[in-house]
Image (cartoon, rainbow, N blue to C red; front, side, top):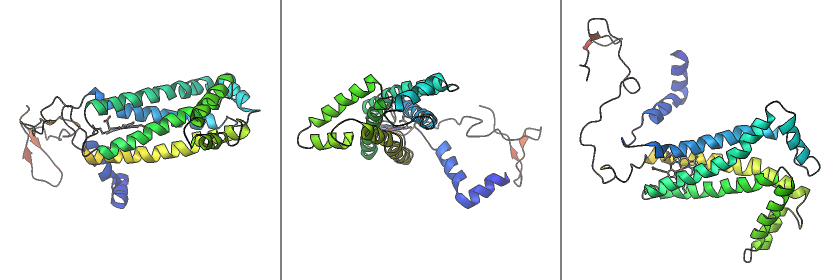
Amino acid sequence: MLPVDWLEERSGLIGGLRYFLFRKVPRETNWFHTLGSATLTAFLVQLITGVILAMYYKPDPKTAYSSIQHITNDLTLGWLVRGMHRWGASVFIILLFLHMGRVFLFGAYKYPRELNWLVGVLLLTMALGEGFTGYLLPWDQTAYWATVVGININANAPIAGPFIANILRGGNEIGPDTLARFYSIHMLLIPGGLIGLITLHLYLVIRLGITPPPWTRAAEGYAAEEPVPMRRGLVEPRPRGNGNGAVVRRGLPTVPRRPES
Ligand code: HEM
């Protein structure tokens, strides 16, 4: 394992990965706990398809619509990449809400995870902003008028409303500057923020551990009553035998094989 040892000695990354993969989670974790990872997967799909789309999209009112048509009709699998990005946006938001619902119903926002809930609120706000700014980019009638409505809603906010609307529009009217601004926010500002906050979110998940479901004894504060049997293979690799029922480990004395349970 020379390359792995080399990397570990210089970076400690392998030890970190081992800690991440073999850390303890409550034994009652279930499918509801996969909603966070599902949201993360949806975000990664948006990231990859978005990078591909950005190679062909042209953020100018004269070219935006035709560049989207070009992606959809002319490029190899362009329709698929665009479709994944467009529908994936809805999947991402739906999964986000389901994940948030799971966290709420399991009471996983309580001490000591309040900070992670607050990070989640920021993630939700930014994800909605990502949807809003992305909607204008095809520059068709739906995109244009939906953005007019969205900006007008902001403009009606008390005191700060008109300023927010002006900042979003980049002037008094929706035009080339609005499109360039929305594109920059959509593909640089918010994704950068999301990546940073998701990293912090996952760090906190690993540091604080996963909340057990509220109906379990672990959630009531009881420790596990009986030791959890180790699953063979993943956490206890099957040792190499010498054929006589004894286990041979390099550099260690021979140990008898444990009875199979
Ligand atoms: C981009 C969006 C998000 C991603 C990728 C994400 C990802 C994750 C993952 C992978 C976990 C661990 C597994 C799980 O519990 O499902 C988790 C846990 C958690 N998330 Fe999120 N999340 C996001 C948004 C949110 C939002 C919007 C909230 C709430 C407002 C939130 C609050 C929490 C909390 C409190 C935990 C700890 C749960 C526990 O200890 O059981 N997350 N998140």
